[in-house]
Image (cartoon, rainbow, N blue to C red):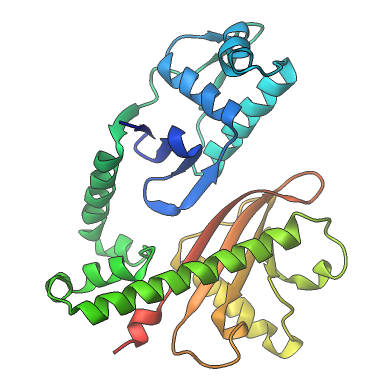
Length: 292
């Protein structure tokens, strides 16, 4: 049975999916390469023991018919550290032992569980958070189905089949809109930041530049900025140096009023060439609050 790893009760490492994500946010998933995944697995299996560079070369590259080098190893270690830091873990995760190798300290709590158990842990974690009203106000469930459960469990358990199908349809539409926005945002920021993309910078929020995925007229900029600031506050997003924020609302995408509020924001770190390196996506689908 495939296993996943829970790091410091905060970050989920799924080797089968080559991904790391936040336990509390399934939308925060970040993919890593096969060599990086094998390196992290090796470090976790040998936690508390220094893994030598020669061991990495053999088990990560040589055994798979690939060419190993110090540059490749250092690049993968750097990428893993950056992903873990982006997901909010600020302590030193992978420690370098000069001229020897790397180690994950024994003090770091890493547990294993099957997929089904992981789901149970996530649900229990959310139930615990639900008992703290001040935190619940900052949490945005990832889709319509979870919103219905949290608002009225009894009604949801006896919900008619047509209503369930309609909610599934809305959830799928929300995912499609979010995916389209994400692809569009990456299309813009993975290329050089030159005209016309420079026109997409709307304002600065703290130390971060605020960008739109489409041009915003001068008369609408103040409203656009207010929507972005409300989204950031509602999701408790903090602006970090070296990051940009890419925001869009359905209000500026749909030619008609759909009666819903679907908004998207990507928080991206920027490399030396001003290109997006690692992004975490957030979105809100508020259709159910208008669906009577």
